Length: 211
Ligand code: FES
Image (cartoon, rainbow, N blue to C red; front, top):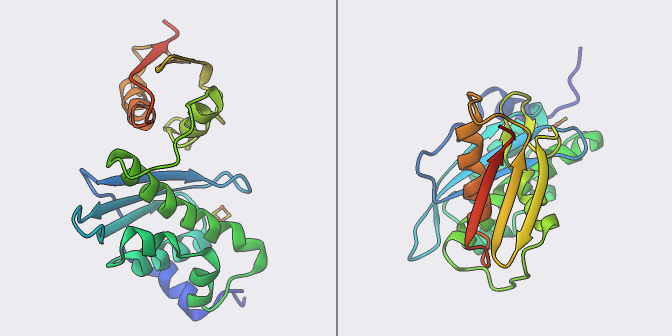
């Protein structure tokens, strides 16, 4: 059977570069694809003086095209400044790979979005974001789409773990459909806090479990 993939795609799929997780990463992004439900996580180590990406790793819960593109964009981003890395597009990554079948475009979009989410996370944590809009329930919900539900391999919004979100004067309250004694409760809570506490106008985050 002939694969509809270039040699380069197959090479990056079989031997992906920069796979793994960076503990104590300076920036982390987790993105899910609305097209297929797959996810990718990207981790960055950034030089705070130069904003050069000194190390970058990814974990893919996606297909061969996603793994190949994530491998390629991490190679492209390494050694670049955050601004330069932000300019990397899925089209450039696809071209570098020698092309992808058009039904697989969303897989490379997902990889690039993972990179951009990690950069955005770094910028927020380091006060580099200038266009600040007030936090709303929708903003909190879209952040929570980046928190994984380890029981399902999908985010906690799409797996309906989030029962309620309240935002009032800098305080955010999130009700989760999970008992506090659940084995993943504390890991999910930690992830939620990390994603929401970095919002510029939020000064208190409460994660409430159902019992
Ligand atoms: Fe989901 Fe490729 S089909 S990332």
